[in-house]
Image 1 (cartoon, rainbow, N blue to C red):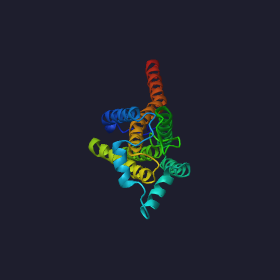
Image 2: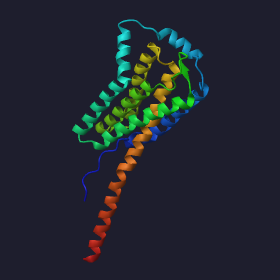
Image 3: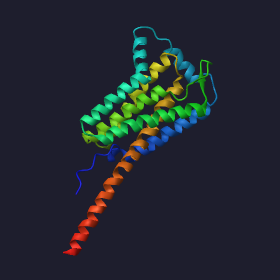
Image 4: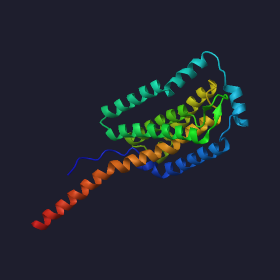
Length: 233
């Protein structure tokens, strides 16, 4: 018989709730994308929030710049490598694969949506919807929360609260930085956060499905072998 199978990256206690949440997040992404397709101006909500947040001075501007760096290639690679190192030290190869796949799928989806929606900011052709920085940072927080939920054995209420809180805090922090620096509209930020909420749970489910197939095949082979040995006795 084979050893104990690797823990699922999508905790069973959260599967029922994360499905509808991911679907709702995907709907928000689509609706905002349709509303602001090929647009280059802020909406009414964008204008009000940006007026209160945009152009912050020191020391908060330094905080915003530090958060922004974490969404840039250099900072993002640093965070992902740290996550991978933690997964490998804990002997969680499936979690390491999930980290790479979750981040990659989220950033890839956000990039594709930018070109499909075509929303720009500052009139210089810079595609803005959804915010890739916010999508990345929210995705990484969701991955950490899902892995922590599984490792700690949290039930549905506690696990769901942890996952949603991680998404909210990470999305709000990076989103504030992007709006404060004038890099994105608030609705771009919301779209980025919801992109992560839609993509990460789906990626977790897919990673589990692909990882469990060999284990299932091995178990079936073991059972067939045991049945054959019993018949020969």
